[in-house]
Image 1 (cartoon, rainbow, N blue to C red):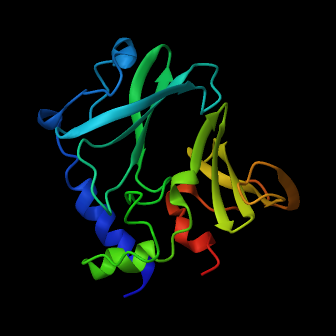
Image 2: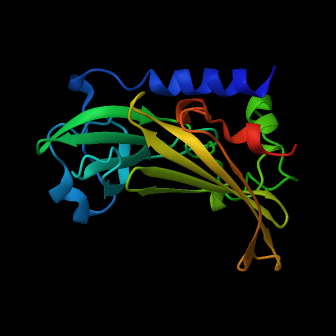
Length: 214
């Protein structure tokens, strides 16, 4: 079975949990986020909000709210979600949930290449992952960036800019970095590839595995 199909099945199962308003929860990891929980923010019971960001993603001069959330009891193969709530004339409204900005979750002991998982599908997936815990998603004005490790000393950074015409985020630039040290502390830009406006990959179609070498 090909990897994209595998991931699609796993994500559909996970998203099926996200149902009607009757299945609404606002549980948070940190009480500091309680003041940011507008009534429109809703995640399924059994899940928890781990981070809330405030950035003007659609560039309308109003801060949108981005919520990162996942299962309270994470197990191998679980999805980590990001939901964007856009703000217009002071009011927040649901925009979109992205289940694909981060790799699927694997605990630190399971990600070890020498560890064989009982689930053959998950074992196949994690065999391709390289330091997935180092993957970072960042939100800026009109921009989402995703950074991840490609090889022992190579790192990729993707720039998804807000595309007003399609009300989505489109890949506009890829940067390849090389690290002079094994820990990846000192990165040097090796190569940059840019895309014409509206011609790059839609963030909804982003698949972490598509960018890995193996």
